[in-house]
Image (tube, rainbow, N blue to C red; front, side, top):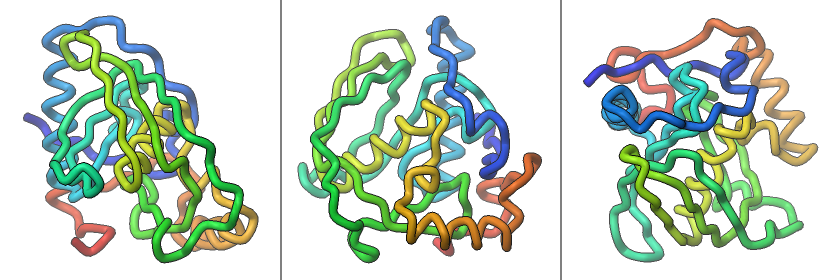
Length: 191
């Protein structure tokens, strides 16, 4: 398995819709193994292929689902996500804060749908489906957004967008070419 550098906001692959996965072959399964290893060393809970510079519609996840009381680990290729309505009130800065491996060291509050169902394929091309709620639903929406060319900071309300834009300038997350290496570079979230 190979650990890949995680590209940072501003890298073009993060800001365009990913291409569908069409070949469910050994190369794809190697990519999935690499993504799981990269995710593990990054201390994250989900990782989309664009975050390692690969513009394909695939993401991996590995995290506790507190609502269901189980650990979930899996893969979605070519996912379709259907969610409950996103509440319109302001996000709670404590309970609804989100971070991203491609926006290292920052987190901001964002409202998300409470329940989602994701349908897609695994690394063998077999159909997979998952219905989750709460924090795990947030993970699914976050990773799905990556495949659509959006990062969570692109969806913040006006107050938090202003804070994000300031932090973006201060950290230089405006130009392509930045990345960090899980397992080698300092963990940007202090895990």
